[in-house]
Image (cartoon, rainbow, N blue to C red; front, side, top):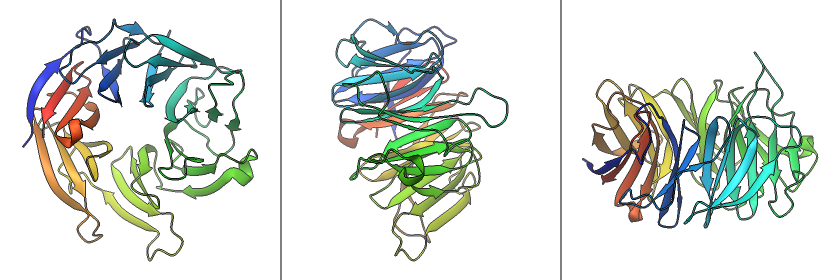
Length: 317
């Protein structure tokens, strides 16, 4: 059982939701519904002044080795020095659209946009080189029909970019190719809106949907089974919702139980017959509020969580 060893609002007002966490070395950041970026250390000490990071609807946060990157409904993508939260770069879309997901690898920044129409709308998967920010290197605008909820670069082939959407599809693009039809390498269909998705390995992709369906898809064409579909895992994992899958030395499913006011870290095992392994409970979690994000820190000895109660918490695992 994990123990909460620190908790802080980081100066957020009582009605603030904290949405997301990111790590750059030994520095951490969170963003909230007050459109503010907060940078802190493992003891929850603020390392710089709070920074208003969007004019409207700050929603996305990620990091590379030295910078934090944010985006939101104002359509602007910004990078910030990890230690000082000083602005380094601003990317403005030629045709501004709300940004709903971002990812970064080396110099490159990927951004996915939000559908602002009722029903299906025009959305884009964009790839930028910040050294030439005026125009995206790639603009894939035909493969999804609804809000982009997830972007991830392949762990060993970073020219491969994965996108997930509320249209119920996960697409994999070869970003060395400009033509979208040729760039689209594979489409995975979990048959429901994608909440989160990512790479478990070079050949395995996990997908969790907004109705708590969980599946693992093989990209290896020689695999015996291309999809392992676990269905609705709320009963299996004793949870109300899935937060995401994080790297805790091996893949760990983070899931919350609102009724029990708890959070659990459940190892993903290699066995298809017994896919879920050891479980660590974070009792109390964020009370009656949803946990929005968690990262494993300090060499796997600690975890940091944030939630809709406006708190950041540090846990000893």
